[in-house]
Image (tube, rainbow, N blue to C red; front, side):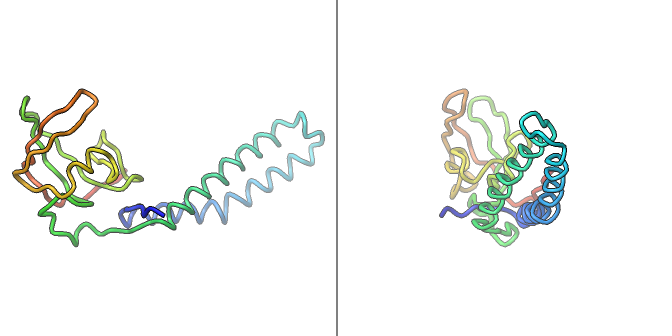
Amino acid sequence: MQKEPMLQATYTKLSMELEHLKTVERGEIAKIIDTARELGDLKENAEYHAAKDKQGMMEARIIELTDLTSRAQVIDPTRSAHERVSFGSTVVLTDQNSDEEFRYAIVGGQESNPDQGRISFYSPMAKALLGKEEGDEVTLQLPSGRKKFDIEEVLYEEIVLD
């Protein structure tokens, strides 16, 4: 069973969603299904079928959240030195060809959002960066091809989730 690294805020959010689905949503959908069932012929009962579909999606989400929270490995990145790239590190890279600078935080899969500079711990890019330190050179396979980067800085910055 592969552990799922994540921040405490993410674990709390997922746990609260799971609890809400189990204790509130399940009951509400069950009532809607019972009410729709009372309307008669189930073959042509759109309310019944919509509620059953919603129930199926909710149960799938409960299974997904149960799995994620059971495999969660909550990591506090403030406790790491960040001398080398690790979970929670922010890495500042410079493209050797264009001198363009990039800034990425290494986070869990549930927190990943490349457009906001957060890349998954399990992504190929993060795997190439893990263990590297300031001054190292790294070659990354990007959609635009292979590129070489200099690691300008490895540090901890507070990770702000949406």
